Figure 1 (tube, rainbow, N blue to C red):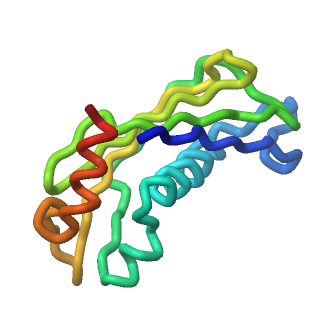
Figure 2: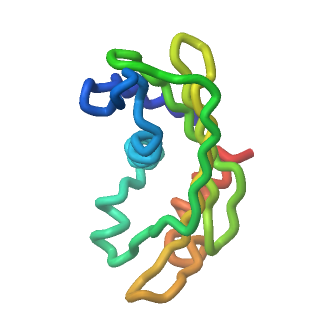
Figure 3: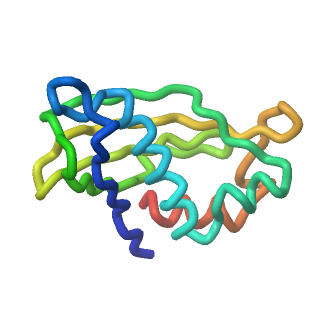
Length: 135
């Protein structure tokens, strides 16, 4: 299954006084891309949350390679770096005109009523799709 990279055009308000995209915005871009990725996979957050499951961020890491600026279009490729029945680690590669501006990762667990769940047992179709795209 091919997943199309997410595209985000940097807004003026997302830049600092030096005209560079503020570092905190990359985490928001990651979330936008991850939500889009899950939608493309056919299992959006709305569906999961409608079934009472949430997916909090456990950790996040960003490595800023070079700056992006106002009006740059950042293309964000999302991949699964690691998965288990209890968590998924997403990897992000953000590029502007083919140049890497940021690499990042976020780790997520899955909870129902505040308790960890096994994706493999609770959402076997979703788990299988995640496993397919992570191979």
